[in-house]
Every structure is written in structure tokens, then in C-alpha cells.
Image 1 (cartoon, rainbow, N blue to C red):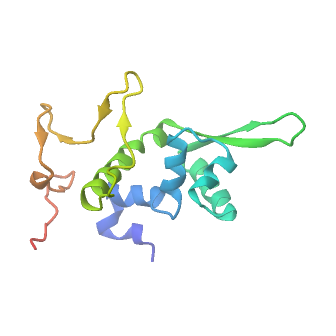
Image 2 (image 1 turned 30 degrees about the vertical axis):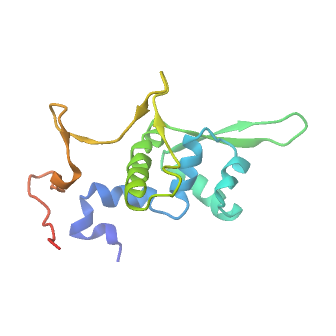
Length: 157
């Protein structure tokens, strides 16, 4: 049975996101693309085996997160570079959320290993919940709610 066909998943934006982003290696490949890497060999820095990298890059192109462009070094065969699409670029919010969670709940002794900064002026940026008026919300005061207005039941420990 396809898990995406279950009532709990069929209209769930988290399930749809995991369908694209939840495959092994995907987020590490996208992390490298967000760092400006575009070539096959550049992505191998993340430790993805070559066969898996070939498959994941093809899937990311097919899913619309990367585009593939040919290039050729003098005397070499044509190769391809992989460039983020707008949808791929917007995965940065997912990365920031994962980074923030890890930095808070699994901190490294030396502090955070990733920082998010403004391209235009270099100021530090942070991902946060804000309401329609721009008021910051504490994560402990946030619940997951259905887009249909029904709150998703929350287990109390």
C-alpha cells in the first residue's frame, strides 16, 4: 500500500514534502547546492556514493528542485551542472529549521556549524514563527492545525 494514499497523508503538506525531500541523501545534496556547488564531483564532498548521487540528482531534476545544464571543459566530454530552481532554493527554510532544532537539542561543543546570513548585507538571520502582525511566537505556544481549521490532536507527555 502506498502510504501517501492513507487519509492521514493524502492532504498533508508534511507528507508531500517528505515524498520529495525524505529520500536518503536528498537534503545533503541540496545543502551542497545551497552552498553553491553545481557539479557532480562537488556534490561528492557530502559522502554520497556515485550511483546514489546519480539517481538522486536525476530525481531532484525530475521533481523540479534542480535544473541540469551542459558544460564542457576544453578537451573533455560534455558534462552537466545542477542549479537550484526557485523551489530548490526555498528548501533553505527547511534547512534552517533542521539546523535550529539540532543546534538547540543536539548542540556541538564548539557551537553551531551553520549560520544563515543576508546575501545583501551579511546580517545574521533566524527562522522563527510569527503571526500575521509580525509578532514572534514561542515554539511551545505553536500547534499543528489542519488547514480546514481542525486542530491535529496533540499528545501530552
